[in-house]
Length: 140
Image 1 (cartoon, rainbow, N blue to C red):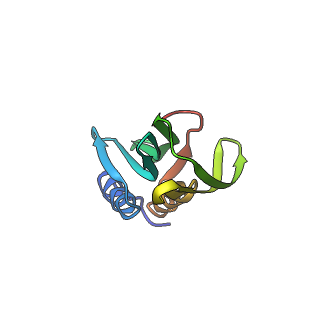
Image 2 (cartoon, helix red, strand yellow; image 1 turned 90 degrees about the vertical axis):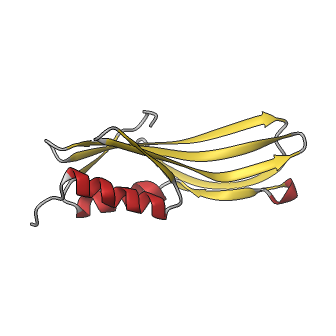
């Protein structure tokens, strides 16, 4: 078994992975990073709706564990446009997998894969020799 990456190198790798998925990234202190991406947008003259995926990682170098949190946050204002949503999800414990696709009046909409980021992060963390710990029911 190869040696685990240092915390600094792991953060650099995670930042690269998150940026590749189209997230805005923020490094919070020395041991934490977070990201957010608006995946679904719909707007018209009476209001709008946005759906964002948020995630955060907290690294514990002494135990080589990365604590991961995620949330899907939907915001709306005024009267959101009529939207056709197709959603297929699977829930196992606190882990939610599946996809959501929205199409709205005026061409708005988008799609969201609930488990893509979690899977990408888990793979990168395991490849670095660290342990992945998912913290369900906690906001990032």
